[in-house]
Length: 219
Image 1 (tube, rainbow, N blue to C red):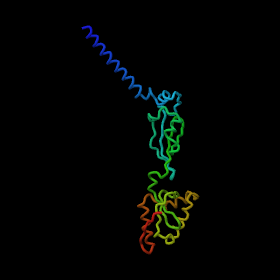
Image 2: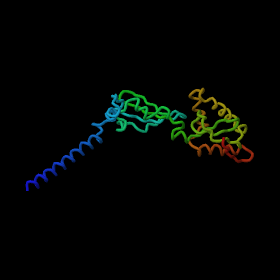
Image 3: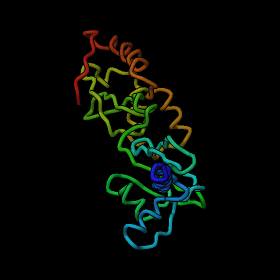
Image 4: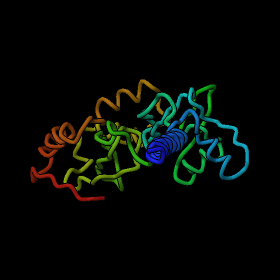
């Protein structure tokens, strides 16, 4: 009887010991307050980490579009758990400069920006007219950004366009040096929010050509 009682107490003790061990193990791994990244790094490397990002740090993530210069903020809020405890060097390893990332700090806010070679979502739909190799050309993006040539309208001769429109096309080639007022006037005539709006104008220009037909040839 005594042996049976001892066995029961031993079983309870063993179960309790296992439960306590599991609780401590799970708590130390999953609790971000007790085990920040800095603590883990210190325990592995043996070197002290001075965190740039703490639990109260605000993190802002943005995309910077090099073609149009626009910025898109896609996250701004409390620091994600996987960043808490990282110092500046380790943050740069996570977001390397060679991949287009840029990190800046203002007070308790850390900005993580990535440069993207292209237009933002809105401006990639824009179209504008210009001159390429003496011919009427269609470019992607707002007026003043001639990085992406979409096509050359070979069947619309510039010489057949109204003289005033020809002057505007030539003026647009030096868009950056124009006054704000001149830029606005050109944008009203040469810049379009999408392909469909542009095509309305091009169809009108077709009538100025003998064959009444327009084709676009890739540039």
